[in-house]
Structures are given as structure tokens and as C-alpha cells.
Length: 104
Length: 192
Image 1 (tube, one colour):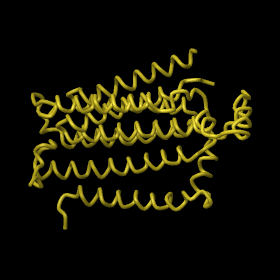
Image 2 (cartoon, each protein chain N blue to C red; image 1 turned 90 degrees about the horizontal axis):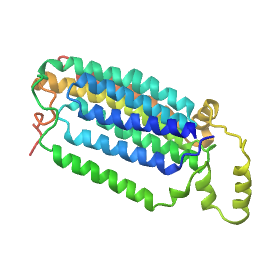
Image 3 (spheres, rainbow over the protein chains, first blue to last red; image 1 turned 90 degrees about the vertical axis):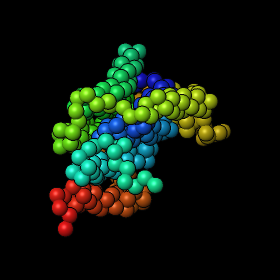
């Protein structure tokens, strides 16, 4: 049995969340922004599983939430790519800064 | 000790490839680095006694999401000229925000009561008192404490009505169906 402290999983999740946040804020291409969002969701999954194991490793509420997060992330990725392709068809670009019709 | 070392190697690979996935300019390389980061995260899941979720992670993220992202890149590629920059004008601001966010998260973890948690159930141990605490400690101390986190238990947790997740489980299938229909309608050539 390994004895890695809980906080090391939390550090890893925090760092991955920060990297994903950087991708969402800094990348030009909409698909890269989507990758950043997926990374942030995975950081949250690590937290769910880490707390589930260190709370009581027969508790299954954490893994159940991870199943729902993975499902919704997959659905979100499909819809987001459909939107990106639709934007690309109308504006001939996949750059998030160029799609500013709704800017006030 | 050896298996702890492997965890830190996996964590390092995960962080490095996640960083590469969001800084490399070529989008195909980004998608491949993202797949590698997802492999690393599934390795971390194995360290958390979640073998089923680790395989689900590989199937869905490496198998499906990365492939769909590569499809998206191929369909929108010809406008990506090689000279254009990958980052927008908020680049420096984003670095500051992401570093601050990670620093705040890490500082908050260091202040939290989770610092002492080194073995399973140690959080529950610290929150119970008196007789129950001693019983739990004796339970944890035994080296072959039964671990029941297999697939059958996860299925039971999801689908047994008394656990309360059965409705959400069925509802998420409706969500998947509507996402499927929605993606087709949005990406269709000429909306009727």
C-alpha cells in the first residue's frame, strides 16, 4: 500500500487547474481553450478521488461524482466542437478574439 | 518507497505534458500532449485505488475526446497559418492570474487540516471522537483492511435507488442524447 500524503494529490490538482486556467485565458484558438477546460475538469476529478480515498476508501460518492463529471465533460466537448465548426464556417476563423458579434 | 517514486514521476510527466499541451504552437502536437497528460491522470487514478475509473479515463479522454479534438483541428485547419501567434494579447496577464490561482490553492492546502492525512480514512479519523475514533483507528491499523471499491460496488452506488443517484444516472443519459442532437443541429450545413 502506498503512503503518499493527501496534500500531494491536492497540489497536483491545483497545479493542473492553474495550467488549464492559463490555457483558457491565453490561447487564441478556440480548440486550445477547450483543451484547457478539459484539463481543469480533470484536476477536479483528481480532487474528488483523493478526498474519497482519504475520507473512507469504501465510500463511493466521490467516484460517482467523477463518473458524472466525465460524462458531462464528454457531452460538453462534442457540443463545443460543433459550435467551433459552426463559427469557423460563418467567420472563416477559429480564433476566439475574432468572434465578437455579441460584444456591447 | 519505489512506488511512491513512480507516483512523482507520473505527476511530473502529467504536469509537463499539460504545460506543453497549452503552450506549443502546433495544434496537432497540443492534442497529442493532451492525450499524454490524460494518460498521466489515469495513472494518478490508479494510485487512488480507482482502477475502473482509470480505464474509463483512458477510453473516454484518450480514445474519444482527443480524437474528436483532432477532428475539430483538421476541420478548421486551413485558416491556421504557420506564422500567427498562439497566444492572444492577454498572455502576460494570464500567466500572472494562473500563477496566483495555483499559489492561492497551494497556500490554502497548506493551511488546511488535510496536511496530516497520510493514509486512507485518516480524514474520517480526525473528525470522529471518543469510542468511535478508537474503533476506527483499530480498524485502520490492520494491514489487510478490506477494500471494496471495485466495479460492482461503483455500479451499486450508481444504480441502487436508496443511494439517490439512480435518477441522476438516467437523467445524464437524456443529457447525452440532447448533446448528440444539439451537436448535429449546430454543426449542420444549412439550418432549416
